[in-house]
Image 1 (cartoon, rainbow, N blue to C red):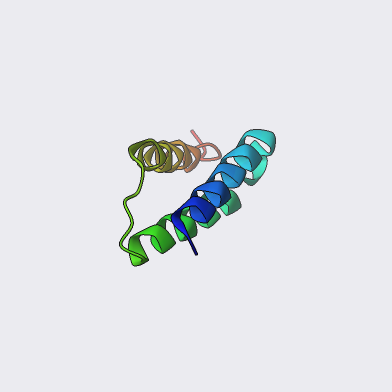
Image 2: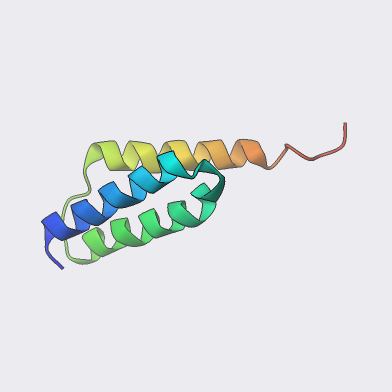
Length: 70
């Protein structure tokens, strides 16, 4: 798959994350798969995509404590 196709796929996933934030766990996994494809082909991963991936991970780590009793 060409670099431009992978970037387009990533863009679609990002749009879906905005539209369906409740599904971001599944979509984040799809994003990771696309990033892994880029790396597997020896292509650079855009810095903004890496930052977004990190942000999604940080957001999810906050969710771990949402339903813990106090």
